[in-house]
Length: 568
Image (cartoon, rainbow, N blue to C red):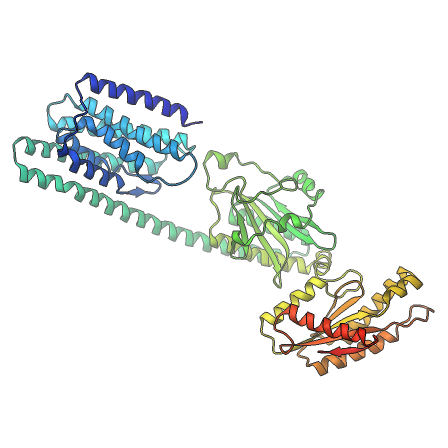
């Protein structure tokens, strides 16, 4: 909407300028002699010289010769079409931006031509042309356009670049006056020499701006490296203090405060995944009021709430940055902060941006840090995210040292009823072993025989006790490096490390023997199991292949009469 009124005014001014030109006797009699001048103007219009985010008006070097060689009334129209049809950066309001740019140059050169046209002294005429053109360019191209795009209108960089551009305009105007004099005197060779200086001058400005930009970037890089060193030093000092704090919740709140103070964020929340209850626990924060944080804690989201946004396309290092609008995110459980300062300064960080830094434990996500509203208004760079990940690693150490939180961590990997690893963790370990090219190991799949009859005969309470006792037998017969898991309701699995099939068979026999001896109270029952064994890498080089082979052996044991151990 901000484009409409300026565009309306500029269209009206453009129509007025055209009308005045016609009244003054301008006719559209196109002459072939000006074609090279038009080509030179288009060339200078396409030649880009940028200082920071501000583009210098290079086409002024092409505008002066058109005025000097007697075609000033054509200049606004040439400028309009050259600007409109050249390539613009893609994005919203493309047509409006192209039209605004074209009208901007039409008005700029049209008004400048009008004020300079009746001045007979070539030097003064071109000086007037340059000053009027630069003044209008500053108003329409810098101030008004910044307002339309909701950017900061005045800053030191804009004034500096405008100063450089004013000198560039005046310098070209003086040279234009010299060229005008030589042309009137019939000194064609000298006129051409002066004309050839125009691309040279544009080149000199380009070299100066490039050197200035490189120097500025170098200075910024040095300042950033120093800033990173200072922040990292501060982080490490504060972490050493935090790690010595016996109050774990206070330590975590201090860690969140480190994120705000050392890394410059307005809000930080530390979250833990409670897989046992399928919810996200808010454990610490900085930047929120107690009431705001209590409200978040009282409405914990399910774990899927965060998992759905962790898309690989948004991955940076081991964290995730989701730009505003890139993914639809449910804000039911989110905290929405105060972003007025960010919006006023037209910061690169948008209110809808999301940065998630996972807290990893052996390649498993056990929690995450969420940060928002960076105080410098900038989206994070790679090293900013890496520093957040350093803090995430230290938060894990704090959580592991906490009795309360350690139970939640263990619950994420273990089955609540048996204390064995979960089905998911079994596959996770299996895949890690294969990925690490482990020399050899075997898996044992265990399925109870006729367990439904035990539940039907003695009830589910007794059935649960049988499951617990079987889990105890499995844990008792495993070596320290072996892994036991509850695969399903009455199914179990074992990963026997550095074990051949013969080794796994011995482990399976011990487990089977002790399972047959299980009793619950005074109840005499017969508990047996069937087992299937497969070995890596002989029976498969993927987790699914190994489990399939072991399941096939288990099925063969069942068909052979149960209470047996088979190996593929």
